Image 1 (cartoon, rainbow, N blue to C red):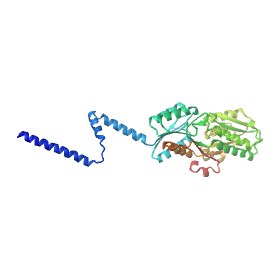
Image 2 (cartoon, rainbow, N blue to C red):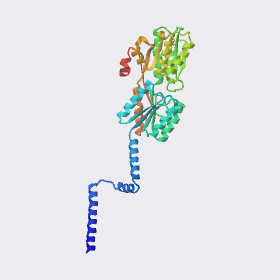
Image 3 (cartoon, rainbow, N blue to C red):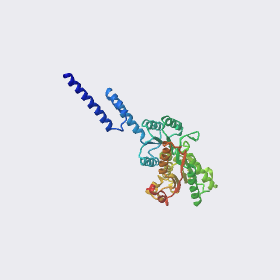
Length: 365
């Protein structure tokens, strides 16, 4: 009798189990059969497999998000701050995150930033290197990691050939526009044959994107002012900072006391602002004419001092916003598997205290 009872009970238990199994399948018809073995393995391994699966899922999510790094050689300068903000806005509009990095004019810091971006699984990198001789090293690191890279302002290049897409300004023509403005100033003020008048061109000869700017300035000026003695055309090389621009300009000004009326143009806004301060220190600013390149600091001169309070008389304005957004546009082409545009150049307009607010709009504030 007992054996019959036990037999009946076992039979009933099996039936319940089978019914329960059928009920689970019916409740989850779309479920994959793959997770079951994983769950079993997790139970056997004390949950280790579950932790690995969770880690893999988190990694996939991180690499799937748009994660852009912007590495700028002089991240404390107004131009790069504005450019970085424009790039950040463009990335955030796409739903991604943007990390701004100041390389502090240090190749070592720059390479560390690239390594950090790679370690953090960046989707892409926008970069302006502090030394173009490191271009190949940057491109190689990014290529090995499978991360697209776009150069902004200063090209990533070897032997004059770009090895990554570039977004920046049309250096030669912008320089030529400045040269034309200075030439017209000379003509309007009868300075071509004035022996007390000299032209100082601030140069950055180690930065290939800056060399055409100075060349354009000199070429257009000498073309339009053939009577201006080239012996009164001087150059001062600096590193792109206001302090070094000041030092370089001071050296030339001090070495040529015969020049009382200085015309100055340069490779970037910081250098020409440095020259303004040098001329003020020498007491020569009242008869000087400085033409900047960028207008992002010239507008501060005019806003704070007025047209008559500074020797900064004009500046070639080009939009840092255009370069910042443009660099992201080109980078996204590469990220999306498209063939990126290799060269994107931004044009400029020479602005003065009379028209800068109209031309620059909100950027003049």
